[in-house]
Image: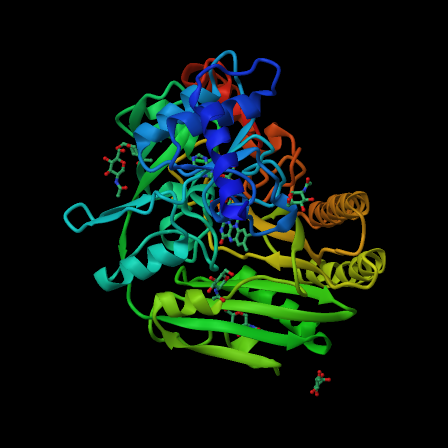
Length: 502
Ligand SMILES: Cc1cc2nc3c(=O)[nH]c(=O)nc-3n(C[C@H](O)[C@H](O)[C@H](O)COP(=O)(O)OP(=O)(O)OC[C@H]3O[C@@H](n4cnc5c(N)ncnc54)[C@H](O)[C@@H]3O)c2cc1C
Ligand SMILES: *[C@@H]1O[C@H](CO)[C@@H](O)[C@H](O)[C@H]1NC(C)=O
Ligand SMILES: *[C@@H]1O[C@H](CO)[C@@H](O)[C@H](O)[C@H]1NC(C)=O
Ligand SMILES: *[C@@H]1O[C@H](CO)[C@@H](O)[C@H](O)[C@H]1NC(C)=O
Ligand SMILES: *[C@@H]1O[C@H](CO)[C@@H](O)[C@H](O)[C@H]1NC(C)=O
Ligand SMILES: *[C@@H]1O[C@H](CO)[C@@H](O)[C@H](O)[C@H]1NC(C)=O
Ligand SMILES: *[C@@H]1O[C@H](CO)[C@@H](O)[C@H](O)[C@H]1NC(C)=O
């Protein structure tokens, strides 16, 4: 008997089980949901072992990838509605997850052991020059959005480095290279196409379903599945910038330059992300420079440019070119783990940045030893925006112009030790999680004592570690958001996904 014959017999056997609508009541909700979905959408569902399955569950960080029971790639909003109706059937209520770019680094936020929905087929992009808006499918990464917009000479407020998805970044807030000028991503959104948990399709905007529109600007996956988003577009010229890497012996001078830039920059077109990171005992500073114009007015980045560097790649170039040059974040070889959190600050005093660099080195040494010497990157990124909240149009994520905080990102990225057992791997991840919590606490305590942070400052939901208190991410909006969730998702179907829920 040939192998292919065996496989076809098994496939036929499986199909006949799947095709009978009688759901075995002894099986778990995810298995039941997968049977019904395979029955309703035989072309769209995938099971372990297939290529589609692997790509549907894949995440940027291996530690936020889970083995789903099955995966599905809906092609239309109607499909999404049918899928939600099956998952949310009162006798099913299966755990599930919705993935756009898969860059969430909290396990369970866009991954699941139940039904993994991948938005990969939602790749539409419509530029409307009349209204100067662009409607973008939530299966796209910003990489492709920018490449497709460049020929039109316009851009939107999206991600700053390659690989990130349209949906997660935009539904959580959206810090962009153009934030100083136009606000967060959510301050440039005109409307969302949403499939509600009931299966109903609506368009949420300032004038239709305004409460839902409010919730979707920061409230992530709480209200339904978003199939596309309409953004304001802005004319795009050539830009100036790139990446410079500095050795540890000048990291304090880089910190001084970053601190000065944070305090004194007045040009909204100028932005940097200034990171210090340690790997294998070596500290380095990496600064990403962005100027939204072909020529750099004198003085803006001088305090950085005068510091001797290891490598520099700064020039006049296209928006797509600079974006792609910011490359992929990786560590070592093979699958990697990630833990991230955020400290909200109003400014970056040089003493704070220098103390952080010392803490980063110590923590990296400790974690690398615990990881059997495999590389661990501990990094802290200063993101000194210039009044990022002055264009605030409100929304679930509180970012009032009366309190301008910027998100200082704390992260631990590590090569997973494949020679250790699954339990040891989870054990190391837990150490990384508690280390990130401790480091963030320490940094915020110092920032508070220096007068550049408050303990009740809002944490950016897209950067916050799983389990961060709702009140710290959504402030006084929490009660309103609970009411909106109860109205649009009365049966709590979206609560079958992970992430912060109202
Ligand atoms: C390397 C890197 C760079 C980053 N750069 C930036 C940056 O420049 N600016 C910034 O603001 N943030 C940035 N982030 C944070 C980023 O915004 C979040 O990780 C974001 O959630 C990722 O979006 P995604 O679509 O890739 O993620 P996913 O993991 O696919 O989804 C994230 C969340 O969105 C939900 N979601 C996904 N699709 C849908 C949908 N169609 N409908 C409803 N809910 C959905 C998921 O359920 C999950 O809760 C970065 C993160 C990384 C790892
Ligand atoms: C997920 O599936 C892969 C491939 O079958 C397997 O190697 C891995 O151990 C599974 N992971 C978990 C957490 O079960
Ligand atoms: C956005 O979604 C709406 C509603 O499903 C659909 O009519 C429209 O074609 C979509 N546009 C894009 C660009 O995907
Ligand atoms: C909604 O409309 C009001 C009044 O025109 C405007 O002030 C506000 O900025 C709009 N909000 C969004 C998100 O477009
Ligand atoms: C810093 O170290 C680099 C090598 O990593 C060296 O070339 C450079 O001279 C040093 N600079 C200073 C100011 O010590
Ligand atoms: C500080 O920043 C200002 C404005 O960006 C710049 O003109 C000045 O040269 C910087 N000073 C130092 C010491 O870096
Ligand atoms: C980033 O990684 C992805 C997937 O591995 C790859 O397709 C892409 O070309 C990479 N981009 C850059 C800029 O290296």
